[in-house]
Amino acid sequence: MGSESSKVPSDEEIGVKSTFSEITIPYPEFTYDEKHDRRINYICISPNRDFLVSGGEDGVVRIWEITTRKCVDVLKGHQGYITCILALEEYVVTGSGDKTIIKWNFNSGDHLLTFEGHSCMIKNLEVHENMLFSSSFDKTAKIFNFSTGECLYTLTGHTRLINSMFVIPEGEMVITGSGDGTVRAWNFATGETKLEFTANSSPILCVKIDMEKRLLYTGGDDATIRQWELDTGAHKARLFGHRSAVLCLCLHTNKNVIFSGSSDRMVRKWSTQSKKGRMSSGDLEHGSIGALVMHDLSKLGEYIFAGTTTGTIICIDASSMCPTRMYQPQMKSVPRFLVIDDRIYIGTYEGEIQAWKADLATISTMKN
Image (cartoon, helix red, strand yellow):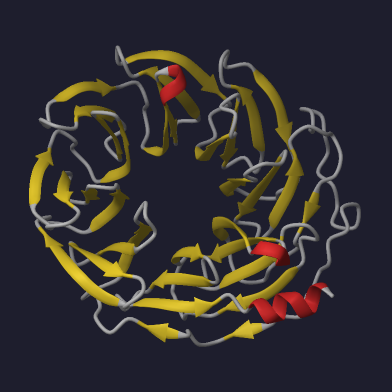
């Protein structure tokens, strides 16, 4: 890992290629028949992987059966656009720009409960046992009784909006990352601040926690990635390499590797336990990298899918960090997308759900 005095490596030092041959896929395999009336803001998959759940600017939540491609339910109740969705086995939980959270029955679509108390749009949602955790652009997080809707605690202390939230049941902690340059760890049994991770005055834009729940990573407006000990709040390392804000982070599921996307149009790969071995995909030439999704395509290898601010999605070989192909769904910003088995599901500006083939044959050919 880099130290505080590490210099930014040049593209030549880390073996970056300045250009790459694009394999462009311009059209989806199919588009679902029904659609939202306006742009899709969020898309997720059910725990049994049988359904997609989407929410849009139209304030409506739709449930889609993956195999039949049919919309099987439409959930109406919010008075504003949908900002986030949590799909559970029995329930769907939705957050909105109307400042409320609604709990729905997944099977019947019934509106069961409304959670109120935030004063701005809802940003993040998590559920653990009988507790619902939420964060908002009102600079607070809240803990509700999931059965009754009672607000148990309001977590106050951040001075700017909360971008990220994670619940760590093992330590009875909820983690919040904010634009005020801090990450806070709260004891969700008491609602009190347990630790504060203070980087600097630069906003923290993204937060990730390793699989073992020992390390915390933050990406910020200062173009760096920082590593912290989750138990003590100690600052362990600072990673240099990006030239502008780090917008998203993605951790490898079982290796000591982290990937980062930036407004400098680069995706970088870092070893979490070494001072060397930094790699990058190079300048992707398609806008800032606003979303990263890792996917294991069976025997063909592991890939990173990067969503860009020009609306394209670029697939990158996670081993070589070479781009392999590009999808062009004609979006105007970072696409809302999922990678499921051999397809990419995208929610579009027009309110459509599109399915794109992962194009395994192309990947296989390039790797041989």
